[in-house]
Length: 319
Image 1 (cartoon, rainbow, N blue to C red):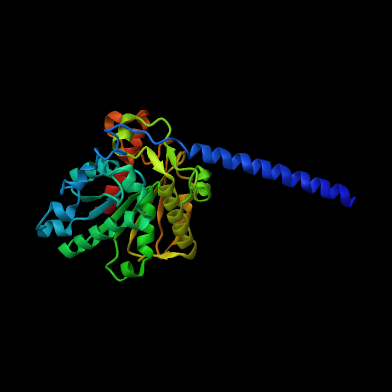
Image 2 (cartoon, rainbow, N blue to C red):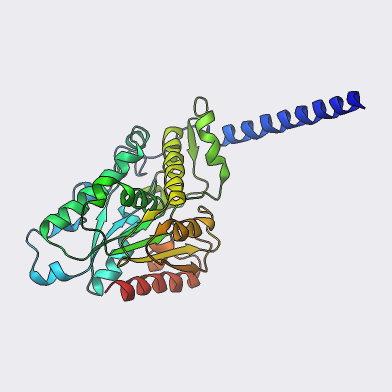
């Protein structure tokens, strides 16, 4: 009996090892694509985010001396996601500013420059421009400031809220999360840390021309490790509880068939923010962060309606 048990156990362990070996091999292969791009792609040193040279993207540099009316107008700091650029929040800004709000588009550190810039940057460096803009707007006297965090932009904002040096500042009046990245849909991200020594590059599948121009297509393993560390860190903070003033309005938008972010992310944020009652909106869409699309870029007309609903809800709750 004992002999049969040992044989079964050995067989089980062998099959488990073989399965694990092939699983790791599959993940390693998918994260080991050769780096390739053209000069007009964001990956290239020849293409960069216009926010690097155009001061109008950030409100703090766009308006040198705000009027009394502007100082009383709600301001949203719009933060794009991992591997993206300010293009991701442009349509949001155009819509809300047409309605009378003010929007400041922040470019994350290490983004909008080149693949090498992303590779050598940490998630703490991605985050720094968010705090810089918040401090700059407060210094100018804006009284009603909040955040819109898209995907990883939302993750970075959540970490910012927990930092002791941020807690001593006047707190944001609005927190808006759009497909915030806490749990990935593709769980292979968990493995990158362990295979990065031979898996160096991941290429996004079937990127369209817009994605090539405004998103990194080649994702360095080092950057994916940073992304996963940030995600795990913020998930831990949410588990402990991030305290937010009861007066802060919190909106959470999550696409029900998001291909990038697991729907559980919205629940984790809702449960992890303490002192407030976040309102969760389930978006009927299979697109991740669809707010970036212009009218001509929607493959599904219904997504255009969904985007407008998101923008209008944000405007209604913030104004």
